[in-house]
Structure formats: C-alpha cells, structure tokens
Image 1 (cartoon, rainbow, N blue to C red):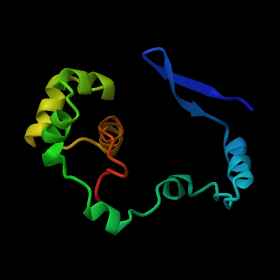
Image 2: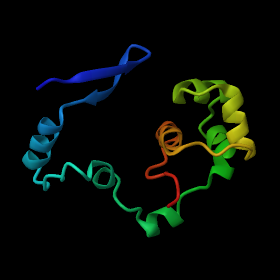
Image 3: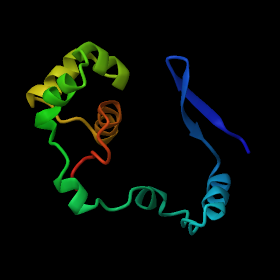
Length: 117
C-alpha cells in the first residue's frame, strides 16, 4: 500500500492512499465500494438536518473561541490561517470555505460543523 503522509508542525495530519487501497479498506470495513465517477459525492454524506439545527453559527465563533480560552492568534495558527483572516471571519466580513470551517470545528470541539447546503 503506497501511503503519502502529510504533516503539519511535524505531526502527521493526513494520509493519502491509492484509490484501489481505499476501496479495499471500505470493503474490509463492511462498506460498499464507491463508483470511480462519484468519489466526491460519496465522501460527503448529506447533512443531518436535526444535528445541524443544534450547531452554533459562525457568528458565535468568537464566543466559542473565548469559551475554550484560546487566543485568536493561537486558534488561527492551529487552523492554518492568519489571525487577521480569523478576525474577519469572527466579524462576519468573510465566510470561510468548508475545509476551514471543519478545521475550526475540530479545534473548538464542535462535532459536525460544516458549510450549510
């Protein structure tokens, strides 16, 4: 299995594997293989509307960060964005893409926070 490991700050963050190996892992986990022309759609299941209704909005980002006792610079660097971009997100000037939202959610401990559909 040819695995590529992507690290951030010296720590492994992602593992990239060949498609055939991914399919074999899915099969071993009891999941159906994904058609080669549908990887993006299959990798992103539809949002659970009941769960997303209880999630905090991006407008609450500053309060969530403060509740975790994180400095803006600390959260921004952990997520991989600049502190000024985080300030723009917190003020509502910018809406981050789904990847940044997922990273913010992970660092703030918010399960399932993602871009609305």
